[in-house]
Length: 66
Image 1 (cartoon, one colour):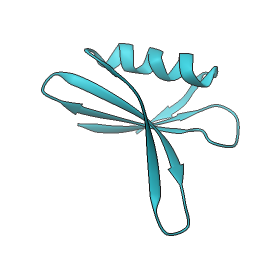
Image 2 (tube, one colour):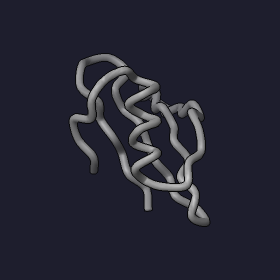
Image 3 (cartoon, helix red, strand yellow):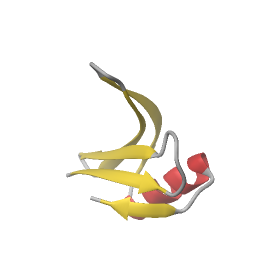
Image 4 (tube, one colour):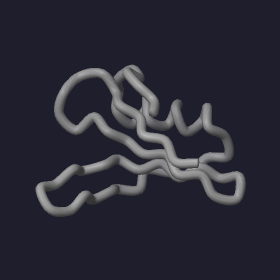
C-alpha cells in the first residue's frame, strides 16, 4: 500500500507513505521537471503514526490522502 498525503498550504506540501512488512516509511516528495526526488523522514509501525510524523515534520494539517 502506497499513499500520497497533501498538507495544507502551498510550496513543498506532498508526502508519500510506503508500507512494507508492517512498517511504514515516510518520505517528503520533491517534484521535479524530469525526475522526482524523495527525502526519507522516518519509519513507523502504524499508519496513524506515519500521519502524525507528517504533521510534526510539516507543521501543517492534512488536506488530502489518496
